[in-house]
Amino acid sequence: MFPVKPRDKIPALVTNDPTLAKASCGTSSNFFSCYTLAAMKFWVLAAAISLALGQQAGKPASGSVPAKSDLRVTSPATPQKPNPSSAGSPAVSAPVLGNPGAGSSSGSTAGLAAGLRNSQDGSDLALRLAWFIEALAVVAALQLLTLIWQGFALRKILRGNASHAHEMEHQSSVMDEQLKLMAEQLTALKDTASAASASATAARENVDLIVKKERARLRIELAPFYLNFGAPSPANYAVQHEGSTDAFVLSSHAAVYVSDSREPDPSLGTGKPMPIPSAITAQNPVVTAQDVLHPFTEEEIDSIRQLKSFVHFTGFVRYKDVFDAEHETRFNRVWSIAQMNNLGQAPFTYWEHCGGADENRET
Image 1 (cartoon, one colour):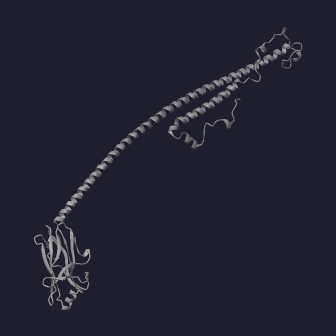
Image 2: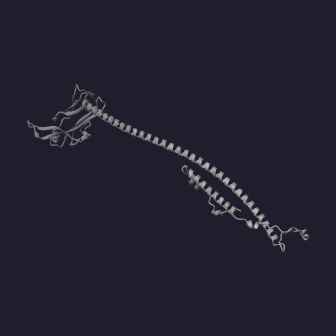
Image 3: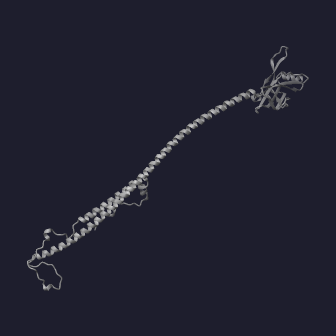
């Protein structure tokens, strides 16, 4: 029988753990090393079996052949006759009294037969060992061919990976060049857009300058005002046109009234539309108009001179220029009496701005 190692001491060649198998042979980079490790385990097992067989072949048999000197048989001097008393029983090789050489010859013959049997068993064992070694050599050759094929396959895979890596590197360099070109184009587009924006801004500024220079403007100029006792007191004004293009009036309003406050009172300055044409041209730049206050009594005139009452003149005009832009001119004035007198000893009077900036503006 062949000596067998205990089960717990034999190295495990196969594992059922999918995690270990995936960790050892899961990637193409460990492909060759995985199968090389399997082949090494196989060779270790084959060496263990061969060593066991070698030990079995070298162990002597229990009834080994005696020494060469022991195999010599001395022929008896005289042939022995069979004993008639032992005719019915099998022949038994026993030593004969007075002839010790006969027993020695019988034992040597038995030892020779046992040695022949052991030699035959050893020949069978050697034949089996030879067959096993030949099979092991065939398996090793097949394993070697498998490893060579795997090496070529791995080399092919590595070449394919190298080719793919080279192609990806080439594509990466091409993409880098394209990105650089796109960045340059983007910079050029930004420069072009900046130049276009600057050109548009300059063109818009030029247009604005032309519009400011050529468009029509309407301003309100008030004539001197005088209080009349027992007669209406007219408030004359003029709408003046400035510019080389026409102005088209959309709406207008003018009112003169007396109030107890120096500040304008919108509830009293309702007034009425200005008596001006719908289009004021550069050929007729000045249009005069008038609004009238009722006749004053002596008490009203004294109240105005003592700054207890105030005369207000308010109004606006909305118009559109030839560039289709709307504008508005709005005014608010209060009639003021100065502390100094004119040459004729009459008090000096004038129209003074009142109200906020929104009530005195030109757009």
